[in-house]
Length: 178
Image (cartoon, rainbow, N blue to C red; front, top):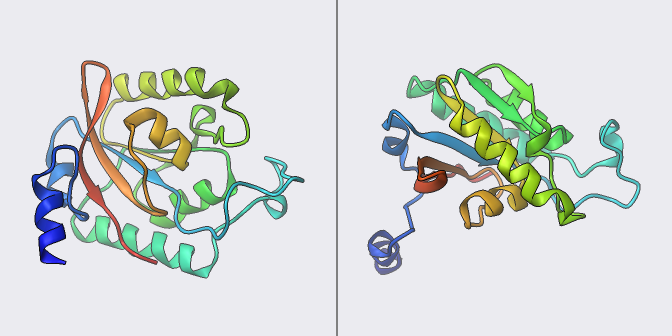
């Protein structure tokens, strides 16, 4: 295990989990995949305005979000804005974190079912990051994070990025297991 950790530390593009120091960079942005929600995608009867039709956080996911929020607050880390997709699992994650005002933001909505809006949403999210004022956290979905950073994430994982020539560069990762 120690050898694997060492290899991941020296390979470019990899960061060890719980790199809290990365958030100290003045231009850093936290991008989080929603907390643990069992399954993949959403049911066929999915409706954006009806949480009962969506894949949602379970007790493990809620606890994961609360623990992560507590870890942020223990370190004195709060955000001026916490932008979230309109999906119930992302909004609930953002609210349970309790690290700043939560604002639903359509460009963070999942395009898992259809990639037709991928480029437009990714550009919109990049604009939000570029025009941010203050400390910013995004709570979104795996597909959105991959489109932005080229990296996958685990449920509840936070990637810390900074903009480099209009491209988010991953400088750290934080994960609290459910």
